[in-house]
Structures are given as C-alpha cells and as structure tokens.
Length: 251
Image (cartoon, rainbow, N blue to C red; front, side, top):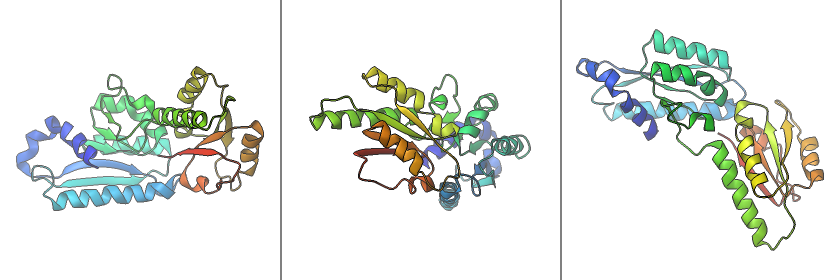
C-alpha cells in the first residue's frame, strides 16, 4: 500500500492549498464484494480499509486524515464508471483505488483527463505506458510480462531436462479483459522462440467442472498450460500427474 501513498502524494498540487484546513483527504474506491472475483476482492478491500485505518493512526498525511469513500461494484464495469464519476465530481476525491482490468481500462482516458492518481488490482499492459496513462500506477509486473517470464522459465527448464523435441504451450483462458490481457504477448513470445501458436481453451464463467477443458489440453500434448482464472477456478483444475509444469496467474 506504500505505492498508494505515493499516488496520493502525486496529487499534492491539488490538495496542498487546503492543507491548513486539516480537512480529510478524500479517496474513492470500488471493490468487488459480491461479483465474479469476490473471493479475492473482499480480502483486498479489507487490506485497503486496514491500511487507511493504520495511516490515520500514524497521523494521516501532513496531519490530515484519510477518508475512504467506497462501494461494492460487483465486478460490473458500468457501476464502476458511475461510482468513479460520482466520487470525483460530487465527493471531490483526489485519488482512487479501483479493481478489475475491464473497469480500469474503461476509465483510463477519463482518469488521465481528470488527473486523478489511480491504482487498481489490474496489471494490464494497456495501463503501463506513462505517455498514454500517466495517472494509472501499476504496483506489480504486467500480466504480459508475467506470462513471458513464465514461458521463458518453462523453456529453459525443458531444455535443462535434455528434451530435444519442441514443447507445446496451452492457455486455459478466463473470458474477461483480465483473462485475455496477456495472450497476445504470450503468443508472440512462443512463436518468436520457434513454438507453434499456443492452444487457447476457453474456461466458461461459472463452470464447476473443467475436466473437458483439461482433457482438450492433454490431448493437444501441451507440456505446460497457463491459467488465467480467479482463485476459485484454480481449485477445480487440481494438480493431475499428467501436467509436467503448470503456470497460473491471478490478480
């Protein structure tokens, strides 16, 4: 959460004129507490709320307390857009904490126009160029770079085991902006290294049994597969012995 404080401090030009007042510094936030990613959205929200409490116990920022104005947007992009607009225009927040890739990407141009420091749990490559999204702050490695790093390790490990054939990759894909975000980079990296285009297998939302998808990947002959899915869906994959290596991604 230190990066979040950095984002707040980046807005000092906006709030410095009011510093003498001692009024709260207002921060907006949207959490997924009841939507598709609530299993991780809820604890994420608890972390941010706890950080705000801790920061206030330490005296806030320049003696001013932080006030978090937040709501459950249930992983629905339109609701996230509504709450962002409301908190910026009516509540006059000076920084914002979002959540998903879909909503963060949908808001990126508005965020730049409003000059609102913004972090979220999305690490999409589309948010990583300061020239295009100067007010979006990524606090981790992009999904694209994560996939490239994972594939690089897998290829090196494959060669270290004295395998001479060309390995195959497969992606078990969550059908969402988050799930599809790293795929172009992963495909380009695989093809650059002489591999055939990785198999992309959709992972339907709400599916309780992923056996058909795993069977398809197995029959394809993948030496590894990469999952882009919420935590709950990872547990439905298990760790069958047929997988020599498994990479997984969630944020």
